[in-house]
Image (cartoon, rainbow, N blue to C red; front, side, top):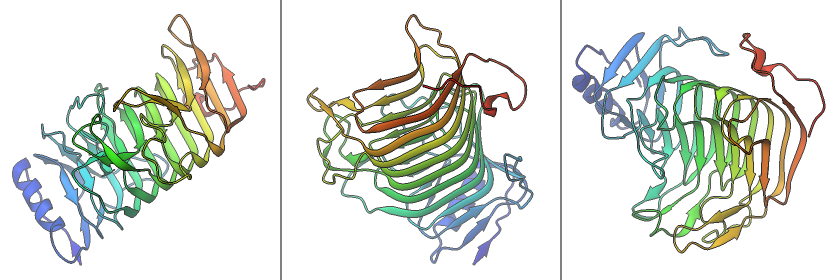
Length: 342
């Protein structure tokens, strides 16, 4: 069934109408009309739903014709996907200002799939497709924009444009626990993820992958960021891991970064310190490659490097080109720089 609710000027009423539709059984298609629609808080998207804006949306970064803007102060994502087989497309999202703190990566976002901390053993969420989505949080650098966290798999993110925020796309393991110091095993690690044609600008960081496996990132333009991307083992690395797949089959390619930050454009780390007891352990990567990437810019700190690798055995770096170019010419970020490579 296709639902086309009439939305007005009252943010509270808009949110109630949309959530009532999304709570309808069986799931169907929620089509939002053109224009900017303000909601008083975020929406929970259960399994099976298609959420899309008007068809006046351009691919390859073209602006959408429909925007959903949240004014909530709860930290709820504008769209929190809590079930499988969900599609979100042709939509602009403006989250409210949020400062969820170091361990609130799944809070205050435009879209969160899954959760970081669960009250009980979760069910896996899969079959989620996010495409032709814009996120704007201009001037606000504290919260992430899109978060894929915990028990999530078979996720596709394609043709997404993000402006502002802390991390454009944050991918992080999850666990059962009230906070990071009381988590219980096992941990849940995102896998079978594909991120293609990603554009992030004016953010702290383009994307990161923390304690994942079977992930492909291909084709990203990360402009005017402090960090391009990070590949991380997670705070607890292999402490609670029940599968030896974690850290395997990761491929990052075709990423162009225009950066200016204190330390690095790219960080690849294999070690992590547990917040349960402070012990350091190392994740062994396998069949993991970062290739065909261009890093333009220079560091602002006393000690910096375009690429920092820390105890990351098993990661292959190939055809990584660095340059100090800070051109503001349109498209300069994604032009291939001259060799040499590192």
